[in-house]
Length: 136
Image (cartoon, rainbow, N blue to C red; front, side, top):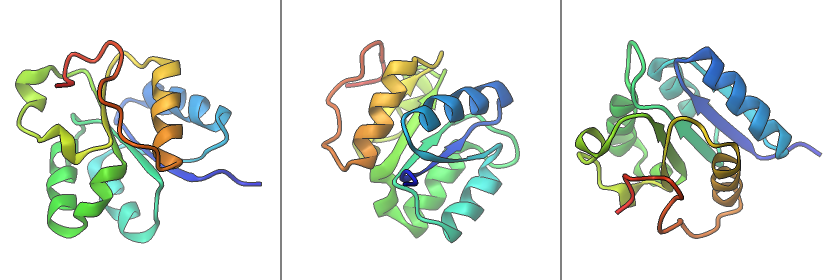
């Protein structure tokens, strides 16, 4: 049995590898991309139950991916988990309620696995993420 499709968009190859290992270990079918151009392209062609999106990427940033989704497919934002090292000063420009969750780097294996699994299952959005100072 194949797991539910999950997209990981992060320019850091170590983060992509780590997230793929964690999420595959949870039984998810994981696709990874290294920039926003690839993320937008694959989101147009394939449906994902969860999208883990880094905000700072070359070419097209995660911020720009979000703007594209708002313009072309706003309902998918409910399945987006923002994973970032940025603080509230930068992420505050987004209405956090648009997304499934915000999680901060460094990656916490248990937290990200739980968030993605809950998102894939269609569980309600968490009200706060342990260790996430951007929740509010």
